[in-house]
Length: 379
Image (cartoon, rainbow, N blue to C red):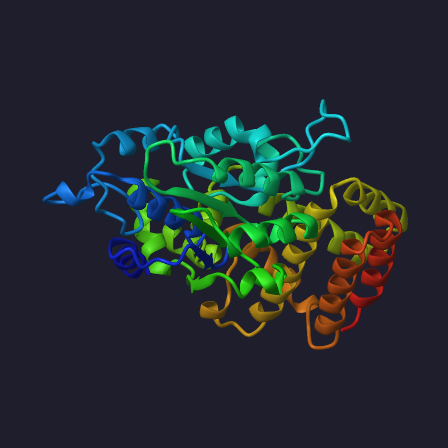
């Protein structure tokens, strides 16, 4: 994929608007940045043996003024757009955009590279409980910036991270900019859910699909960059399921997956014991989390339910469990069986739907606990 994009860019045949699509952690943002760097580099044609860059974009010279600016995130013709929320100190009648969080964005890139999730980004700007979006102020900002001449006399490039987070007004305004872009202007979208974008935008960009990173590549990287043993690297890589972002996240102590696992175990134990008062406390606890986190938790519950059900078949190649999860599975897996697996899975799915539609969290989660107390006893 990287070689194909580089070839198109090198022959000046790259469409002015492209969309890199793939699951979280597959390298979309890394590839977008590498492609933009390649296009902005002014010394690549003079390089005898390319050494710099990532994701296959190795023809950047790394020495020209443009490359030096890019290393420090100071190139004036590279622009980023990403999900945000309205700053607390900004009045409701004033527009906001990515510009309000640009310093934090560059700090995130410096800390994590190009591999981080939306929850990690929102946590870094301390708004993880709020609904993020790309507001209409973003299209106004880009229209103004891109209408001006290139600062360095070359191309102007705008990278959209998770463009599916654009609200409708922003997307409609951006559409006109994509249809009639200023000269030498390129848009690079890095999307996880392109189906959520307006059809009018999807039809005006050329799509490139990225697959998840291979398990072998993640294993090698974990052993080389993180010092893991081959056994630990292999287990982590299987759990990562093609996502380098998830692989690195799993190595962090007290990560979100461990937190969700603890909540799942608590729910199942309390449901089995039919401790209604404690189940009510559990429901109140998770109801206090942000909706996006609640949905991630419920999806994690679905994964665990599936894994514990599959554990009953004693086929290790079908299971993706941590050591702690596997120890719990030895005694718990028989309670997830043919009589309740569908009911439990669909229960989680219904609550995901209702929470996504802004249903009352306390009612939803207490109802979930009561139904779970029934389902877990179906032998």
